[in-house]
Image 1: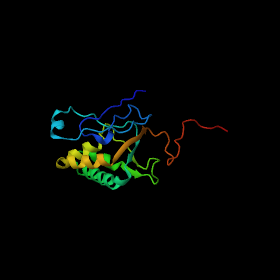
Image 2: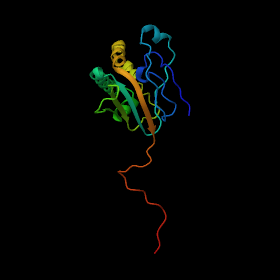
Image 3: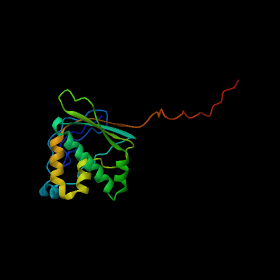
Length: 179
């Protein structure tokens, strides 16, 4: 299993470090990302997409305890961005993306939020800031500053395929039982 860790390019704070190539290991603590300035926008190469494999993804992040309202406002803006997009893929992302706040703080006092993505939209870019920048280009810096100020670190990422749906009866096999 290979891990790719490094700084995400120009303003893509969603994953302040590159998440593992597979979802079996937790990402490292967040590193500062480059703020989305006019200079970096023009000079930066195309940023890597943040995609998931499998049917379902669970992505957990830590948010500073005094900044949870800011984070939740950014998530509300993300919802607005996805729903207002003319790209049907963005609408499908919104349909399957929920954000859950854990009831108890983490040991360090930060608050964990879990992005529950079911179903994953194959090939879709789940970079939070990219979706926000597409929808609200005039608010880039303010959105970045608010999200960066709230974000503590990526905690974990798990994605995979459903092996058993407990809500459905088992499929019958072709074999028959004789008496």
